[in-house]
Length: 303
Image (cartoon, rainbow, N blue to C red; front, side):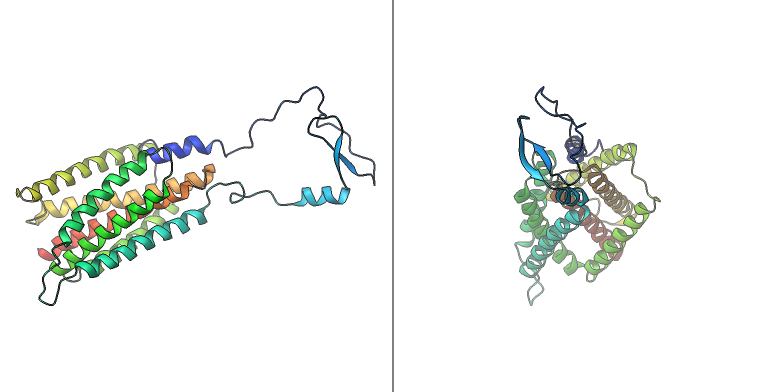
C-alpha cells in the first residue's frame, strides 16, 4: 500500500483499533483478578474504583446476563464495515449522477444542434477542479467529508459536460461507454475476488508510477490542444487507440486496488470515517474508467 498515501494512513491508525490496548497496572490497594468467586446465592461485590470497598452489588443472574451478551461488533466500536463503504459509495455516486444529469440538460444542443457555449468552460473547470481536490483529499491529514462531496459535485459536472459534447459528436457513444464501464466493474470484482487478479505491494508501486506518468501525458496533451498544437487523439489511428487501451487497463486495475484496499481497511479495523475515503476512491476510479471508454469508442467510431 505504499503507493497510496490515503491507505498508508489507514494502516498506521488502524493499529489503534485492532486490540483493546495494554492492561493497566494495579496499585497496591487494588484487588487482583484472582479474587475468589462469592459463595452460592450471595451477591457479587464489585470493587470500587479506588479499591477500598464495594460500590454496588451484582447478583449471579446479572452476571450471567452480562457474560452472555454478544461481543461488540465493528459498528459498536467505531470501526469501518463493508456496509459503511457501500452506503458512502452509493451516496457519492448518486451525487455524481444527479449533477451529471443536470449538467447534461443544461449544456445539451439546442433545436439548431448548437452546443451551449458554457459546455467547454464547465468541462475544463470541473476537470481541473476535481483533479486539484483529488490531491488535496489524498494528502489531507483528516477525512474532510465536505471536500469529498464537493469533489463528487465537480466530477458530476465534468461527466455531464463531456458526455453531452461526445454524444453530440458521436451519437450512441455514451451508452456504449456506460455498459462497458459497468461490465468491467463487475468483471474486475469477480476476477479480484477469486484471485485471478492479485494486488501486491510491488504491483501497487508499478501501478503508481504508470498512473502518474499517464496523468502527466494527459495534462501535456490537453495543454497542447488548448494552445493549438493538436492532440494525439485528434487523428485517431493505432497510436491513439493503443493509448486509450492503456488508459482502460490502468483504470481497470485501479478498481482492483480499490477492492483490495477496502478489504484491508475493513480487516484491519480502520476507523469508520475512512468509509468516505474508500467510497471516494472507488467512485473516482469508475469515473476514470468511463472517460477512457468514452474516448476509446469515440476514436473507433471516428475511424
